[in-house]
Length: 249
Image 1 (cartoon, one colour):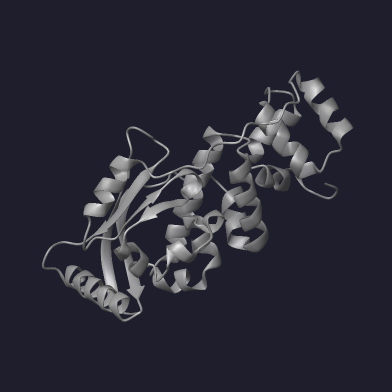
Image 2 (cartoon, rainbow, N blue to C red):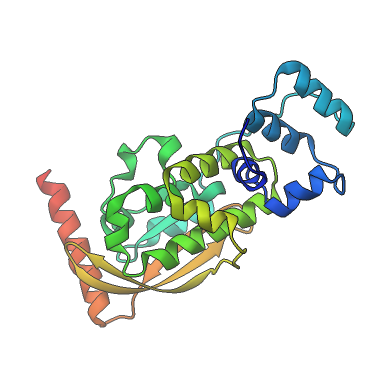
């Protein structure tokens, strides 16, 4: 695509600028999936595509589609046991695979009515204005989400769905574009988050990411509070409010 800088090509292909630079300089052998992403990003013709694969010594076959990811039954069992604690199961690219009613209430989102291709935590963070007020420190949460995506991109260069997500958010949001192209950050798997909930008020919740042993691409994220704390009582109130709202709807 004419006019694209090296770092812009890397962003749209969901690879790091350093990785792309090494490809250009011939210091790395690209995989077929990475080549396919570069073909897409650069809008190469069929002849140009064939030539690129030939130069790289790769077969120009089509990448196989992955089956849609589903929440693992073990994680779903644990999720269903949570009553007061909000919880979600996140998959590849931080897609929402499953959630409990408290998570939908905490995020003020009816996930069931969100089209499946758009059920993504990072997309919600950057495209839903309500997220910027719900999180007391939205930037910290958004940066951590970007770090997780970058880690996935490094592990699976050439992932088409991830490249599409990164390209979409890079076009829509300048902060995402800046953080994706900036210095890598090690993502966290736990901590404390403060929420300014429109119904329950301020909630200071501990969060933990529990990885599924049977499928490491899935994590159960749980937000919890100490029993008898003000935040715990806020969650109990939110649970009752959600139940009452459901009965009246």
